[in-house]
Image (tube, rainbow, N blue to C red):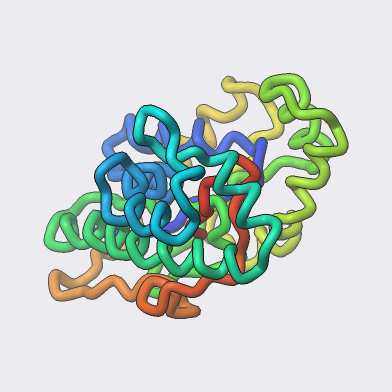
Length: 231
């Protein structure tokens, strides 16, 4: 197995790069998707959230009411800590499970994590950064995702800076252009990934450097849609 991390700021087009790698055969372990999966109706995590925060965080269809949960968590630091303590251990365990499924294979496994810079993982063979200027992020969030400019800039400011994200990058994808400019970079990235050494078959994925995958306490917040990021 070859194991790397993929990150990029909001509006960078990280998901586009992730999809392109998946199309070439990479296994994508998507942190945001794992968060959604562990909060599905009937899950232990959702039951714990309802027990801690009340029935008001459960929608009529039995799913998590993310805006309601976010409203509670943002208003109370203790509530936010409790939220992370419930969600993150389950997310860490599921991400570890997905990684370890491929440990004896020759697959390229990509951890797609928005906040990888803020909360690094141990044992990765490299970090891929999808990079764009801040003004490009703002423009994309306003034009394609319906943000107002102030909210877009606020979201960006809560993440690592561009310079922090680029520090320690093994491969940088410049996604400030169009898809035609991106395609040759994806080809180079794939060649770089295939050049990395295979991990030993007895490799054990350690998870987060701060140990939150084991201890369940995270210093980051929930996004305004109520989903707890897993970086």
